[in-house]
Length: 203
Ligand code: S6P
Ligand code: ZN
Image (cartoon, rainbow, N blue to C red; front, side):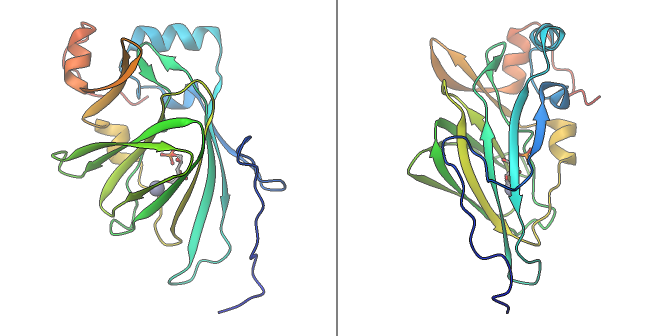
């Protein structure tokens, strides 16, 4: 145990930034194949390649029992009816849980077990905490009109495994219907768009 490590971080809950800490950004082009509506994705990307989200990670120590955390800013918007979202991942160390603290904006977390049998959509907004159990794929979705700012706190040993989601994606999608976030089966939304039951494309 050492108190010589970085103990205090000040962040801006409105901009989702940590002064002095670099950001890792994900642009629309980084999420090729993640959104269902392929025509809407291509049309949007032909116009611009905006930043969809940015994370600022803080890793004070990496020993057994240590924690890492990341401040994230997920922008508002949609591709077709599907809201802007993160890629989503499992933790490489599957038992690792995570705590998400909502700071600003409004959205939700899509949680799914590895068998794809259990799926939950849990609100994420200011003054709320979402507990993500181990063995659970998690994705953040901005269903509001302003940036969604949140903090994720996880075991230093958690690691990120993007492979399974990049290959088969979540079973559910969150789309805007009649002005409201609505949870649909991915296959049903694909069929409604006339895209059939094709596999998730990962370019
Ligand atoms: C890390 C934590 C978050 C995500 C962030 C971006 O374990 O869950 O900081 O990294 O929400 O999402 P993603 O799926 O692109 O890493
Ligand atoms: Zn995570």
